[in-house]
Every structure is written in C-alpha cells, then in structure tokens.
Image (cartoon, rainbow over all chains, first blue to last red; front, side):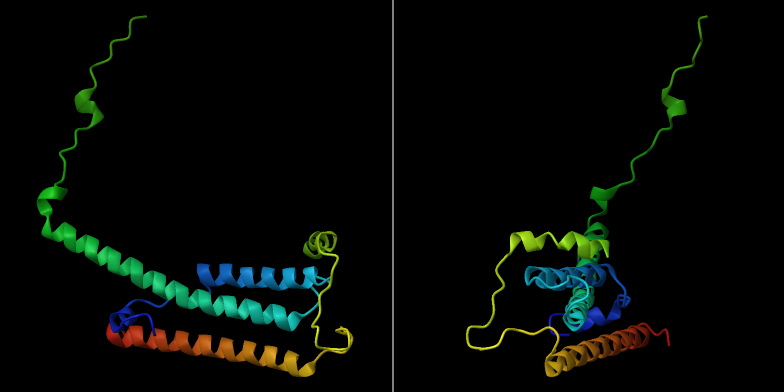
Length: 110
Length: 69
C-alpha cells in the first residue's frame, strides 16, 4: 500500500461492501447518469458500460479510502490510550452518589 | 424508471449537445464503438479482480500477523 505503513496490515481489513465504497459507487453511478442526461440520452438505459465503469472506480477508491480511514482512527485511538495510561492523575474515577442519597424524604400533604 | 423520469428535467437545462470539432460525423447511438465498450467492460472486470485479490491478500496478512491461522 503506497500511503499506509507496514503496521497498518495488523488491522482487520474492511469488507468488500463498506460505507465509503457504497457511497462512492453511488456517486459514480450518479455521474454516469448525469453525463447521459446532459447529453440528451436516456439516463438509465444508455451507456451501461460507462455506468458500470464509474461504479467500479468509485467502489475501488472507496475500499482503499476505508483502509486509510481505519488506520488513521487506529493511530488516534492508540495515542489517546497511551496518553491516558501515562497521565492517570487526570483520569480519576469520580465518586458517584445515587439519587437516593441526595433526595429528601417525601411527605405528601393531601 | 422513476429515476430516469426525474432526470429528464436536464433536457430543459441543456439544449445544446456538444461534439468533437475534429470529426465529421455525429455520434450515432445505434452503432456503438465496440472497442471502447470492450475496453470499458474489460477495465471494469480488471478493477473488480484487483479489488477481490487485494481484499483476500489483506485478510491473509491480517490473519498471519495476529496468529489466527
């Protein structure tokens, strides 16, 4: 992978069907349909080869984009957890009181 | 079908069909350029094959690196 270092291969790879792929595939399809309709051709039925090519390109880019996104979020999580581990005094568990301890006894006056 | 019906509005937006200034004949939809169609479908197939291969490589790498195989 050109943009990803070797450690990114330790992460679970995204599925073939993933959010970015589906969205970019739909964008590619929309581009193909818009291309058809602006050239005064029937939007869905003309140039199916073009539509499938655009969908495929979008899907392909989406898969690699998802891999890159997963790696970026994983590094952020690792840095955050490392910071929490090195600064425990900033992340102390606060003592929690329940409502039963705060609320006064209720004496209805009817 | 409804989507195609909706996109017909663009014929009101764009009434000018442009074409290549260096060719003599109009683009004819009844005679498709089979070379271009073949290349488009061929590159579609190649891209899907690349995608599936890359995915299986990634899954294999993940399993070997984390000792799950």
